[in-house]
Length: 90
View 1 (tube, helix red, strand yellow):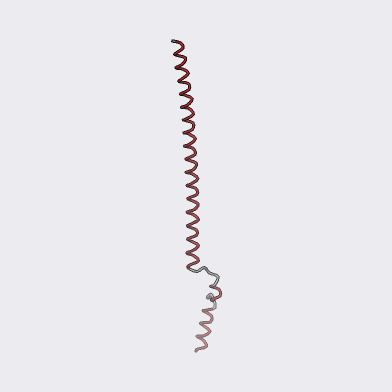
View 2: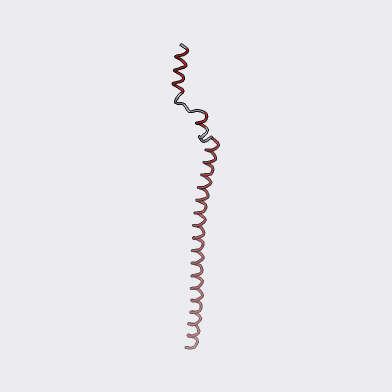
């Protein structure tokens, strides 16, 4: 009877992984570290994209401000010329 039980358990255990088989699997720490690194990578990507967007936005604002200042200077110059012409007409 003990022979039958040993054969039964040998057959049942044949498909299970051995300690050597399990050494190639990730541990809990491996998985946690991989997830942490993944989250850090995603955070870095998002931060970079946000920073690029912010830099582009600021550049566009500076460009608009420069254009407005250039227009204001040209307008002032034109206004002065018109005033001078009006003074000479009078």
